[in-house]
Image (tube, rainbow, N blue to C red):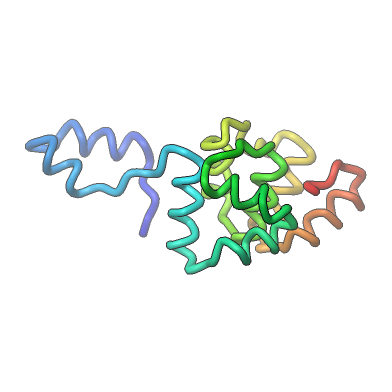
Length: 139
């Protein structure tokens, strides 16, 4: 599915014959982090327990993040993003849903993280690169 720009979607909304036509013909992104993570689990065919393990999260804490009972830090969201092999766009959506700032390529640490996301690196690999380059690791 091709990602459309906000302006394109707005134009479609304004040109729609009715609100029902527009709503019925579009998939809307999840609002909360828990909803977004659930959506990504289904989209990628992943199991929550495996993602929690791959993200190196405490099992109880990870479960609470996925059910919306806990609000994770920016780094915890990034751990999950790498464990789920999210794209940059998906990782930024997860960060925004968690109330954290999106990744900024002008920030050295974020640039390293963006590069690693784009390359499909593991959580271990991004931490190795961050450490090697003198930046704070994700976990």
